[in-house]
Amino acid sequence: MALTAKIGDIFTLQKEVDKYRPIFYAGASGDFNPIHIDAEFGKMVGLGGAILQGLCTMAFVMQTVSEWSHDPYKVKKLKVRFAKPVLPEDTITITGTVTKIENNTAHCELIAKKQTGDEVINNAFAEVELGS
Amino acid sequence: MAVDKKFIGKKYPPVEYEVCKEKVKEYATAIGDLNPLYIDEQKAKESRYKGIVAPPMFAVVYTKDAVAEVMFDRELALNLPMLVHGEQDYEFIGVVRPGDVIITEAYVADIYEKGDKDFVVAGGISKKKSDGSIVTKGKWTFVIRR
Image (cartoon, rainbow over all chains, first blue to last red; front, top):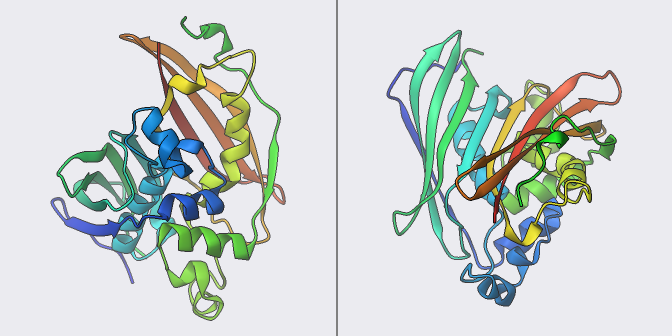
């Protein structure tokens, strides 16, 4: 299916972070930093508990873009800024907007917010190849 | 103490990683992205890719040890308890599949100060061992509070 896009197109995805997500992600990615798997350690360093790995939240952003593009390898570039920590039992809503189309590539701006409205990822951009 | 800019351009030894199907499935399950291309052999075979592919962000897994070389470099001596991962940037150039051996070489892309923070940007270029083709280019921006 050929991907088409126009400026202003919006796509979105919601992800629920269950209690054990940082531990599953630690096992899968190898990121066992104690701030992700030890709630007491997380509290001690002022994070309010064990926080989700930022790169896991970035993977949520990638999923948002690749579900929109129907083909993950159409996504040629993804850049994110980690603005605030994500904690277990947060719900993250990711929204992408097509802002520019150039050389058969859609440029998208992305933002991820948690249920409180706080931005957890911002200044995020993706480039997606259009066509089949 | 500011991080010395003389380390900009420093290169680290290559790190090899062999992508395996079960690890790809484990990663896809952990991030909750159950695209059949990552986990369903039959459906993946019927796709344009003719088999299972790694999620693009699986780059995180095969580049981890290469970037760790920068983070834990004793010469660079980053103050790890004060370090946070500020930004991440990936360019996805080639398709990665189970069986691929990926070689990543990390380097120090930039060091700068802003306000009372130090910024250290690690770069990583990942290639397939089989043909030397680039699969991803990554940039990790670390922010270190003083």
